[in-house]
Amino acid sequence: MNKKTSPSIDAWLKEAKAHESAPKIGMYLTHNGTVRQSAKAKVRYGTEGTKEVTGMLFSYDRARVDAVIAETYKMDGIYYIKVWLNEGQLEMGDDIMYVLIGGDIRPRVVEALQYLVGRLKNECVTEIELN
Image: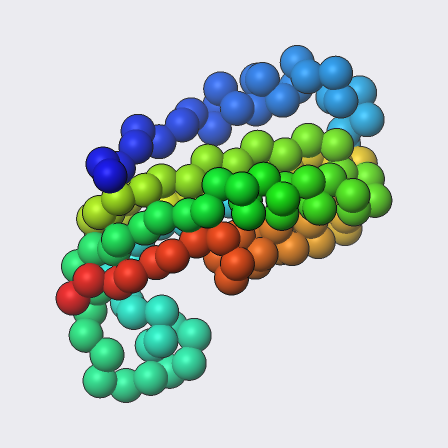
């Protein structure tokens, strides 16, 4: 698996604003996850003695991703979703994922972005930090 070329958020937004759902959308939010130097255990849990990350092996379950996207569309006020996930051996600073969500009002879009990214990270992807 080789890592992919990252998409253009500008192109994604242009596409989203031309989509048939655009008249219902009052807000778009994006998420861009990247490979960071600090280990997840240190950042999330304060675990000391963790080595710095030099890269990551990243993969995902496409069917599960599609199912989670479909479930996110069931949330009130959510009309547009686009997800891109990288794969393979990633280096420091490489893009892990991009997510774009469009919906009617800010609270719903913020909630949907948090819901979708959380489910992707917890249920759909495999991240192996390299030291």
